[in-house]
Length: 348
Image 1 (cartoon, rainbow, N blue to C red):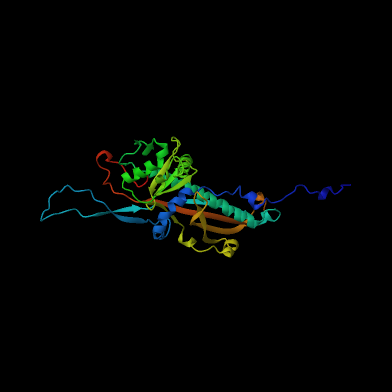
Image 2: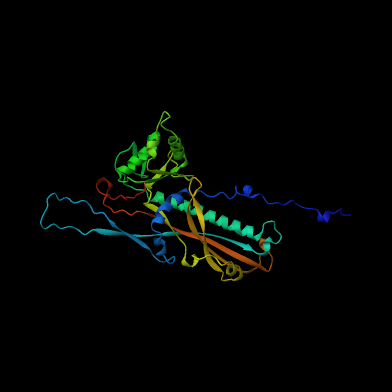
């Protein structure tokens, strides 16, 4: 006798709770994307100029002229015409794909809907993480080679970093350096975790304590990134005027409507659509919504190798987002004297 051996439960199966699953699906660090989102809001029409991937888009601005040398008025004064500058915008494309078969979930504790949702979440998180890394790299590639004025530190002309030697006045030196270079307004300061630890300590001093360091934080928006800015220092930061460096997200025109589920699941042609995802700052607050393009089509396939069936329907899903980094373009007026041949930028 088999004593119910054939009907024995071979393995206990259960789903983890959503709270338990949330550890696996922690949102990626998007501190840089959140910090750079401000400028895009200033002129979102720039993205609309790019109707498709191969269309070039330019932005223009008038530029400053070099100072003259005249010291006397004349009746027949002459001068050069003011000039302008064109900047070609460049977008990167980040793409994530996955596929699901209809039959592979017929005998699975995970439903097709759950698998689809987790696939979308996985793709979105990967896109955000990859764009975050690219935008930080864009900032680092855009740092100025010109830094005028004096602070408590040394200008490293090889790395184009100001090496500040006063830990307790790190932020005060950043503010002073920016003022030396003509930037008086609100600043965005992106700090790595080592620099942020010091800033957090200083920010929590006050008049009732032995040290009052609050003056250093007056016009600074301080953001912490878990990524490395420069590992060779005991804390690093990037600083730029709040509205002078940013991102311009873009998705194709055919993706700017919601996805039609019926067309996506019942047609080899499929459908195109989009949805928005929140970008979180370093405090976990939603500061911006990014559009994600989605393309879905379904076709017949042999999906036995993926726990499906020989006559199955295989859904192919693609998520994508293009992103352009842009900072305020500058003329070569300041690149004179000791700075001849150097490149100026708003990013320090």
